[in-house]
Length: 174
View 1: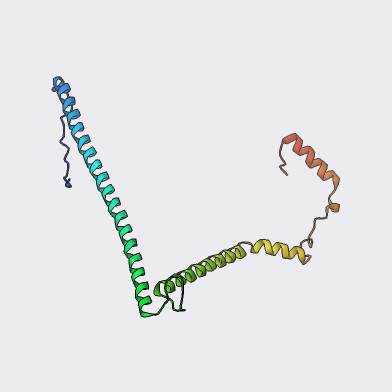
View 2: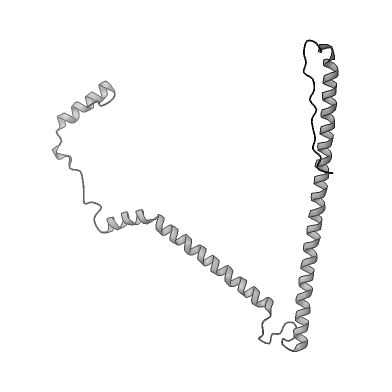
């Protein structure tokens, strides 16, 4: 499939003068629609086939890569055994291979990143909880009950008059 540019021809519009050709025009539009639909379906099927092919190729390449890496590790181990740097499998002379060092470095990096993430979470929690800590500190220091409302100076008649006003009007205007 090539990337052809599809030009859609313009079809005549229905007028009083070409009323007798309406049936022919509709058939031509249907035929053109069918051709475009077939092209689209062919292109879509081809795209799906290509995607499937590349997925298979990627899977095979990944398997081959992993196999080659394993063979390389085994060959490096055999060379080191022959040179006497390490003992046969299952024994260790204290020397680490590059692979072992990389694995340990990766584990250290992952654990450091985990600690950094935990520390960032603790710092965020500490900053978010600052207002609540201030409230708790004020309660513990005795500052919470520093101010209170004393209603002893309010005259009962004013309260009664406002309640009656609210009941009558439905809202307190004053």
